[in-house]
Every structure is written in C-alpha cells, then in structure tokens.
Amino acid sequence: MKKMKVSVVIRNRNEARYLEKILYALSLQRVPPDEIIVVDNASEDNSAEVAARAQAKLVSIDTKTFTYGRALNRGIREASGEICVVLSAHTLPVGRNFIEECLVPFEDERIAGVRCVHGAKQRDLEEWISPQVLRSPVDPEKVIAYGPGCGYAIRRSVWQEIPFEEDLEMIEDKAWAWEVLRNGYHIYSACPAVYTHIRPRRTLEKIWRTNQEGRAVYRRFARRFPVRSPMQAIGGIVAAVCWRAPRAAVSVLVTTIGTHIFSLMLPIIARKKASQGSRPFFEVSRSWKGSKKNE
Image (cartoon, rainbow, N blue to C red):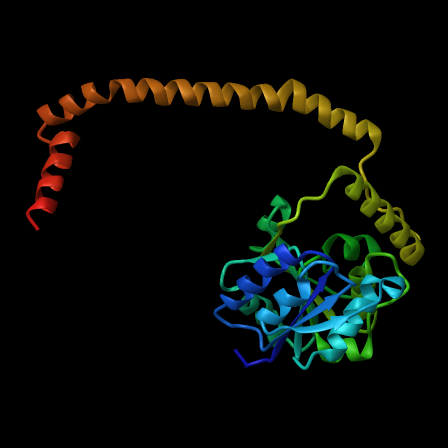
C-alpha cells in the first residue's frame, strides 16, 4: 500500500477525560497518524493540557460562530496530511489497526471519503464484510443512511475543492458526501475500521440531537429525517415487555440453574472420569503446586 500522510482532526468541547482516551488509542496504532489536530470549542476543562501532553496541535473556535462544518474546515485547513481522519472527542477507535483500515480504500483515486463502522450498531458490524461504494446518481436517503458519520476519513484534496458547509446545524458530513458524489467522486461504506462512543447520551440530548438533525436534513434535502413513529415505538415496547424481556429472563434462569447443577455434579463427573483413566483435577492441581515448590 502506498504511504499516505495522515492527519487526525478531533472536535472537542469540555471532554478532556474522553479526549485523553482517544489520543492514547491513536498512540497505540500500528500505523500512527503523522499529526493530530484538536479543534476546541471554548472548553473550560483541561482539554488544552491533555492535547499538549499528546503533542497535538490545538485550534480554537469561538462558541458564537461554532458549527460542526466550520470546526472541521478550521481543523482540516491546519492539516497537512493527504488523508484526514475525522473524530469526535468521545469517538474511540477500536483496535490497533483503525488508521490502517481507514487508508486501504483510498488506493482507489476515485474514493473521496470512507465511512467507518460504528461498533454499537449490529447493521454496521455486519456490513464491513460486504462494503458498498456510493456513486452518483444516488438518492439522498441512501447518503443519509450510508454516508460518513461520527468516524470517517476524507481525501484532503477533495475537501479543498468541496469544503464542508458551515451554515448547517448538523449533517455537515452527509451534505459533504452528497456534493462529493454529485461531482463524480465515490464514498466507501463501510470499511472495517471500528469506533465506538464512550460518552453515553442522555434522553434529552438524544431528543435535541434528533431534532437538530431532522431540521438540517429537511433544510438540505427537503426530506424528513427517518425516525420511528409513536406506533412503532409502542410496538417495540410491547414486544420488549411481552416477548424479549420474558425470553431473556427465562434464558438467565435456565443458564443459572444449569450451571449450578453442573457445579454440584462436578465431583461425580471427576470420579467417573478418573475411573476411565484420566486424573482428577484436584490431583493435577496438587501435583502442579508440588512441582512449583520443588523449582
């Protein structure tokens, strides 16, 4: 694989304890990034110190002018890598091959962006074995579903031609992918570079984020953001209470009873095995301890 210079751009606001883990995970990569840029949105914690300890470059952005797209443009403008890996401060790369896996699809010059796999989503985890390449023409719904998310990589030369939109509340990554596809480039989805969110979102934050994303999707694509209807939610609750929860409870009960019975029968099983020619575990354990003493 051709050697490509890699810059990691991390957006952060008051997430020092998560940022520290992200930076440490990046330091463990088999193919480490050439530089790390933290775009900080007026943090009031020790994020700056955390970034400095990891020798990451800190770029500040004012809260009053902050948008996700503007923060990314600021960070990538400071980057020098041919490939820019984009993360949030609570988006943890999983494993030592994250950066390496991000780079593989870029061997195809037509690939402008790579969507990574979100480890908490079963659909994503299954998709890496059958990745797809988004090409124009494509429906906005498919770009929203399979375009870049919280962990992705882009080709900086394409970004210079098509920067992120700075007036959108959210989905700046989906809007970028849409414009990129319209200009003849391709988006690779999903490469086996896995990430996970290490900061849980509270209920009110989930509602706020979904509303913001929904408004941005409607503004940009004149489409409704795909959300569950109340009837679907009620159906899911009923299924969970009446079907999945009882099944899970029965499974736990049967497993607990089965393992307990097996543990009670272990002496009988051990004696039976010994009569068939195998040594009982307690004898093996005793002889092992004796051998340690004689060393």
